[in-house]
Amino acid sequence: MKKNNTALFISIAGLAFLFILGVAYAQDDITLLEHDAFIERERPGAVFSHTLHTDEAEIDCLACHHIYENGENVWDDSSESECAACHKLEADGKMMPLMKAFHENCKGCHEKEKGPLTCGECHPR
Image 1 (cartoon, helix red, strand yellow):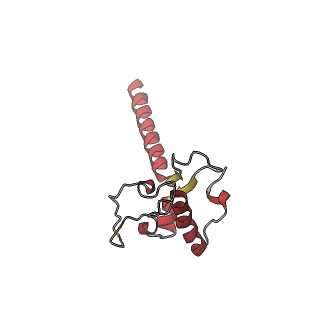
Image 2 (cartoon, rainbow, N blue to C red):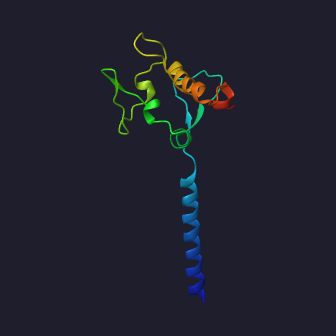
Image 3 (cartoon, rainbow, N blue to C red):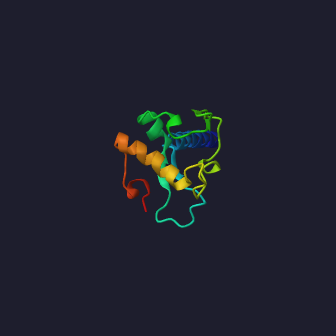
């Protein structure tokens, strides 16, 4: 009888673990877009969901991710550099500053596609 209870307990625990694991991986991939360089900010980083943008809105990765060589976007999934690798905090005459790059990229698309536009919609307090 004791062996049956132990086997039942292990089976239930295993099923519970698999269920929890499935729920955890089924969650939307929500990311907080923020950068350490923004020390003084009025609001927290933007809440961002890759699934909402790529799967539901069917936006191509290249709409946001870019690495330009000779005027062509050569970014691919193996490109792991951050925006701040090229876009610095202050304008340098070559690249758009980091915060402006974030805002222009997001807001430009949101204006065309009827996405959120007010600060609080992307940067909840």
